[in-house]
Length: 161
Image (cartoon, rainbow, N blue to C red; front, side):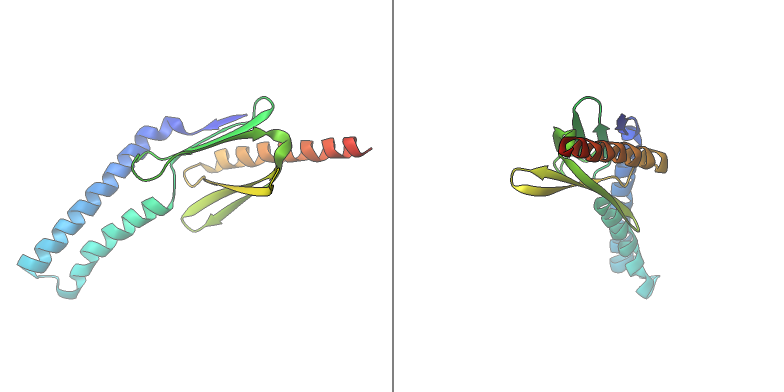
């Protein structure tokens, strides 16, 4: 199964530009209010708090582009950011039989996918941002990963007997 949300890249670029514009206008409005107008008094700090919160929410939601491919004998995960200077992209590929477990953590504004794989050094946990996936895409991802884990367990039972 292949899952990718790269077709939404234009939307994410627009969203990042909008967040930057809100931030710049918020700072400009705050500076004008603080140094020149002084109409809002103590409420003027909302002019800077709201844009800063918007930028922080956008940043902490994580990487926007997520790609997953489970066709063949390997699993391929790729997570990248539209804003190039924020983070490096993550790309991992490993055989299906190394997948031990997965967990999707949903915390208020962000969603993370934790993949546990078996390695020569022990179990390794890989982390991917899936905040920008739709519910359907997230459910498809869960189903696909569950099938791989189920197949791995059946293969282990067959090898033992």
